[in-house]
Image 1 (cartoon, helix red, strand yellow):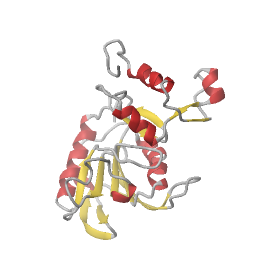
Image 2 (cartoon, helix red, strand yellow):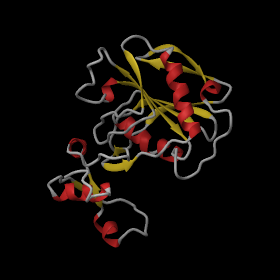
Image 3 (cartoon, one colour):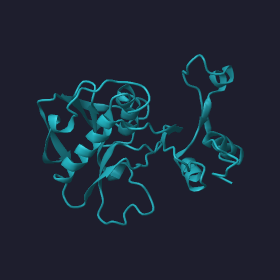
Length: 240
């Protein structure tokens, strides 16, 4: 049974799930050379969003570790450090003062995309009633803005997450860069599968003000200095 005492590790459970019929497709990637040669030869297992939901619903992802699906890969969520957690809380408070009725600010809640189910730090979504997401997570069409707060994850947020969000046409993507103390705003996703990217990028420095655009309309402004922690953040392994 999923979550039984005989299976302390979730990764054997996922392996069991594959054996029980959670079939998917294989891919070949440029992987670190210290991986087993078989992995380098044939690639690794990737899950569709539907398969990921089956694993979730059948209890294979239960436990203290939180996961997200990134381009088919089941990835543990990193534990946030104080500067990261504080910045997310500041963002939520600031957006609550700006967003109109019918739009919600969701902190660390999944969004369901075509090949991924990421858990952004903050997502601003259209929600006409409290029951809209009783049976599903918001999709790309529901999202007005997605925000990642970045220190250790900065390179990944600029590459992997940008591709995931632009491919599914997330309208606006912010990276709150705690290392350089700036906010990077990406807009106009091209939505292509081959080379997904945002057509426009603007970087707002610590003394600048970021316009908040939701639904194509300016809803207000946020000063970068109101978001950032007072102390400069250094990138380090083991957390966000």
